[in-house]
Image (cartoon, rainbow, N blue to C red; front, side, top):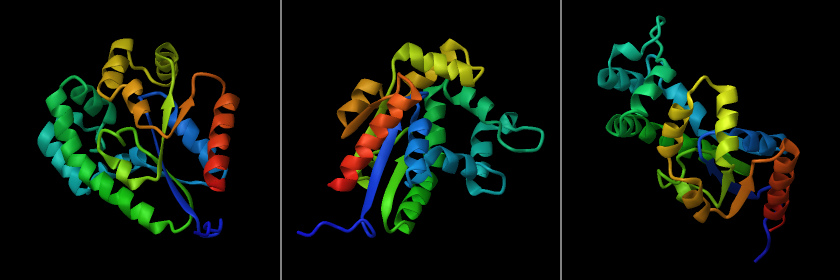
Length: 204
């Protein structure tokens, strides 16, 4: 069988990891080398905007107390609500995820060649492995993870742990991985791992 030429070769990479592991950093490194990024979180943020049917379903389910003065959904209030109640989290996921997954499929279909990186925190939880050719899991030490999240947010340690524990653990996610990137070190160390994976995949 002939290898595909680089002009028409398409590789779909799944990129996932625990909350605060540094997936976005890894995605940006891939993007800087020419990869197309499909960011599930960004899609999720868009589908909850006013006038979207998902927005109305969320308000009907969780009430108007989660709204800002401009009628947009306050994502921090919504997150605090659902991460303190497993049933509410499941309700939110049932509302949002079908639409997010539909858009992800459309975006993948629209790219005919090159490296596509699907950056999705719940990629494994939602069984999206069938959408990708290879799976990358980003890992980080627990203390480094908490430290970095606290630098970027005003979440308490308790709230951070609730969000981390709402996802499949890093150890379990790593069992599904074709590649593991350790993001506990410097940005340069992470970049070296990303570029090594890219070279390996593009040569195969």
